[in-house]
Image 1: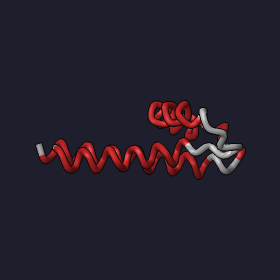
Image 2: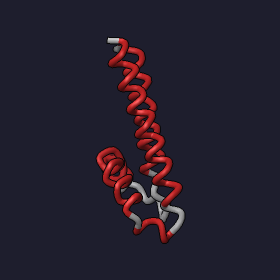
Image 3: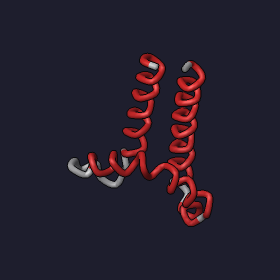
Length: 85
């Protein structure tokens, strides 16, 4: 059971780092058309899409806050996994 807990926490950590990498890549307009960005976007979209839908109720302007909200959610989920498994 301990191995499963560690594996889940590490997987969540990897997803967080992928979200950070994709967010940094989004600052550069030419990179957004690359295959790497598309791959990262496909990987992180299931986590970010519900956050983006939740934030669409509020006017956040031109800044997409869904990656930050997704990271906070994943951090909270990681702590729950670590505490209860």
